[in-house]
Length: 248
Image 1: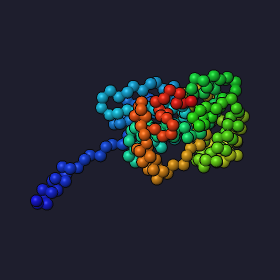
Image 2 (image 1 turned 180 degrees about the horizontal axis):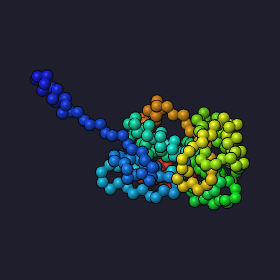
Image 3 (image 1 turned 120 degrees about the horizontal axis):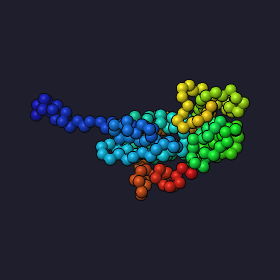
Image 4 (image 1 turned 135 degrees about the vertical axis):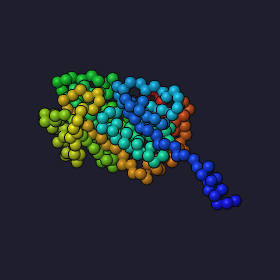
């Protein structure tokens, strides 16, 4: 066989690479052109399943704001390293459960219905921790709880603020976070979706995940047993994505 014939056969054996999964927020699900993972925020409309063409999986999240922005970026990193759609959907649910997220506002919290009751005369705050919402305590106490748990676990800490935080309540919360070693970054632009408040302060504690760690997790999710209902990888006792009450 000539070298030209061998080269031609090698070209015919070439297989095009599969494009990475697209990670989108609920409002942008129609913009995805390939397989897509849709992150559904509290209050988002239901995401219709893809009828034809590429696959689409939706993951209903309980957190909002800063926490969703972090999850979005991390899942995009996972997609860029070759994670498959099923594993990424399971990873999204597991990551959310391992985040600790504090949100404090002056008005109504854009969270689950049980947390929507509020008085406009006093700030409201809630802490997402271990897969449940904790609320009723002052925002400063919740901030100290978040920071203390992050130190024990070795988590990374972030905080941001929107709007006017010169009033006494947000100033005290910013000072509390500063004492805990968390600098609050002022974010310009419009208020996050669903927030109807003159100010919003968020803090987030997240696991420190390196590229190597994501690679090891990819292998673990690929080898994990599958949910008997939705067929996604299951890490732990049960599937967090498709089971009723998985957000509580």
